[in-house]
Length: 156
Length: 109
Image (cartoon, rainbow over the protein chains, first blue to last red):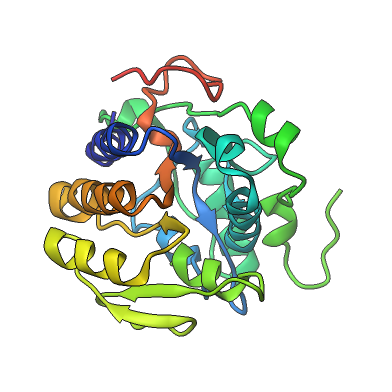
């Protein structure tokens, strides 16, 4: 587990201890493009080095995540309590997401890398199931392949 | 940055109180606040009396001051105020070796 993951896990535990009825919302990489309220969040996806082809996430658009959060906030407290997984509908490697981002902006493609070339503590596959979210929230995030599609492109 | 989007798409009937530290907030009633300062967090929550606190802020550069302490302070203040609490967390609290993870799945440290 990464250092960031460890601190976030400790924060989850602290919140549960203080407020047992709290909602804990786990999300994945959050993306948006220029013109969204958060501005362009693509830079954060593109650190200078290579992007792993064998590390997968479920990225979600910032606006979609925010709308889902407001729907969650509107629930009665007893329905809101506990863990929620708010992630996008697609599973993508870091490299695939970086490629979408660079294509969206008209930049050169990122360099690919493999995890075994760069030993570390980053989790390999943190796909989250969303049974509760699908059942209890009506908001449905769009695929980031649509969100980051170049202007005029169509996605299937 | 998610916080900025959250306030931008807030329902019109929500009375927003937004905290800002390094970056200015541009919606709602703004409050300058260092979330690592427990006394300041408690004083603001006591004064505002929120129905729900949504905690999205974090700073990866200092795990204690930027992630754990703000969560502890806000959650404790919410408990005392009787406010609901929504904590933004992450998929990387899981170890990445036992996917997929269901909502009730215990975290693997």
